[in-house]
Length: 397
Image 1 (cartoon, rainbow, N blue to C red):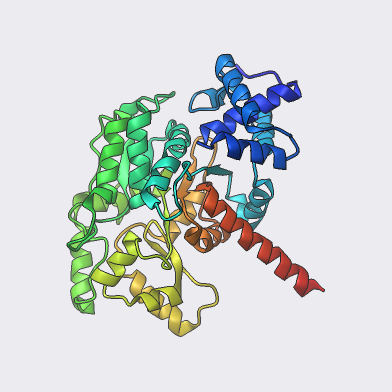
Image 2: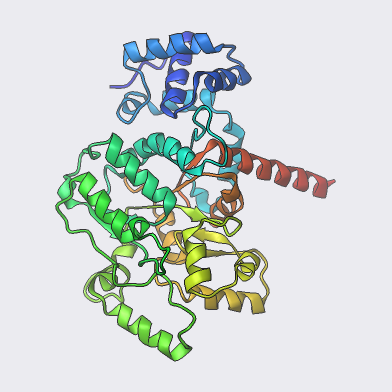
């Protein structure tokens, strides 16, 4: 049952406050956003409206969002968004209109410094997990990435949601890892794709046995010469679950070609705490300077080439990317290209302003259908978009 379309301005304010509250924003930040958008309101008034939203059952949470007609929800999101122009710009980047949805959630709990990454990630993951749960409820085949951000998201799902329910039976859903295991003494197997897929299957209540790539190294170390690497790849291709996920196809199409959704994140080679960067540098033996020169970052482990690489550098990048055993860019392109109302496609979850350049690039390449980010990454993307507009304007003069 949808809400009436003819809402009073006060009812719209109530819904806007509820929408921002569900994202974890404090009252002061909500008041600033609504005031900046022309709806003058102070922090005490925000508290009153939040109480009114709770009394009416209008809190925009995992289930309450379904109460709103698409038109009403769009109007409230626009009214409550400090980044309406950013969404328009990001959509314009994407070929074939691949970006269907942008969600921005707050990651700055009161008193939390920008350096306190774990606290910020935990704060962001709670509201982000609600939206991810909604998106996955109709999916049958779900790909799962790896890393710190996804591990926090899975933890939030386990704490806040008892599985998505919805129109499909949970036991039919299959969670599919999309990369092998990290190697090395400081690797984090608890953040590996197989471990996260297993946890999601348990949270979902799926009776289907989750697949595992536990016997597959995410990156083939450079200590192996080319002929040895080919033997390793041949061996990996014979591992049962790897063959089911990636092929080569036998009687059925590989699962990576049949994903309804994949939940993943992106990595930047500017920071020092990226799992994939660590794997390539410490296990793969790739100097970080080479990575930064050749790639803008990665999406779920698949390297994103920098624009305008010459033939020599393109070859270097291909050699580095060849050490990766997991999902590849062409898979993301295919999944993103067939997304629909029932198939959310590629869901990217990321926080931190250092991810702005790589997020901008994966959008430009048409690899993302749903982008879920925090407010600091949104601000950084806004700066990039503003600089791009100014650059184009100057070039046209």
